[in-house]
Amino acid sequence: MLSEIWQHIGWETIIYLAALTAVDPQLYEAASIDGASRMRKMWHVTLPGISSALVITLILNIGQVLEIGFEKVYLMQNPAIYDTADIISTYVYRIGLVQGNFSYGSAIDLFMGIISLIFIYGANWISRRVSETSLW
Image (cartoon, rainbow, N blue to C red; front, side, top):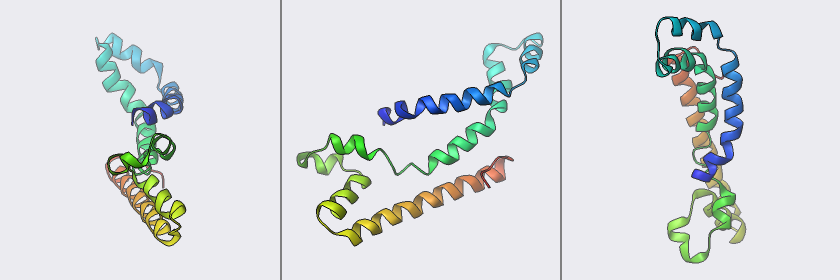
């Protein structure tokens, strides 16, 4: 899990830094004049300024909740630890391609895709109801 976070942190940092450039610097100056601490500036200026980017990246990443990282798990896996280290993606690979049960592997993968679509649609629906930011 930590390697997956480490893999994506660079791209998301670029997105958040780009969103930070859209925040008006005069808001930070006004907060400083009002006596706001760094934490208050972050809470009341920075987070509302980048909230739309946060919501969009959350919606896009919530669809990949079931995709933990096939390559990392597959490369470190062996038959002795299938019971404890198996994830859905490696199970689909093992059942579908290695054992030749293509229909069962495809059905599991299709079901994972439908669940991911439901997660994305649900997160977008909640985002649209709570705030004005959504994908569609």
